[in-house]
Amino acid sequence: MKTSQLLNKEEIITMAAGGDLTLTTQRIRLVQKTSKSTDIHSMCLDKISSVEINHEKDRKYLILGILALAGGVYFLSESESMGTLTLFAIGIILIAVYYRMFKHLVVITSDGGSKLIFHTDGLPTSDLIKFLDQLEEAKLDLLLARSPLPSTVDANQVTLTPN
Image (cartoon, rainbow, N blue to C red; front, side):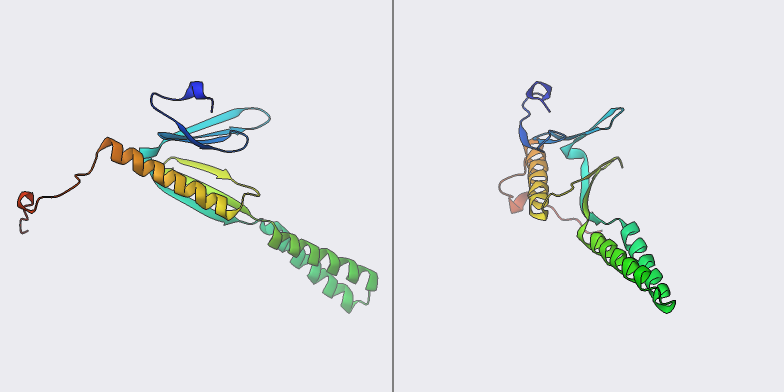
């Protein structure tokens, strides 16, 4: 997001390396580019109801690895040593790939039900937690600025009524 796109009294808090994700003092903006189009999603911070950070793994590597190991066991019973070794090696490699490759999936949901969903490939969990903390702090700051809480409460002003 360019500074010329900022709203009145809005400041950039943090921005992803490519500028695809921008957190400001008033909103979060996600720009998703494909070869054919550019999608822009923007959500006001005061409308955010939840943020999730999930782990996503591609199970096809695990399934293919298990099938390759099963094929290796089959060829072992047929005494095909070359096929057995090849399938065992492929199976182990595919299973290792499954356990090494995972993606963080971030889902930001608004109180209206719309969602910002994006992957953060290769981003350390500590950076994701830092982003989450910045987002929550910015939302809290915005809400407090719009409706400040009283600094003290006078006990004489509080009235409790029974149900």
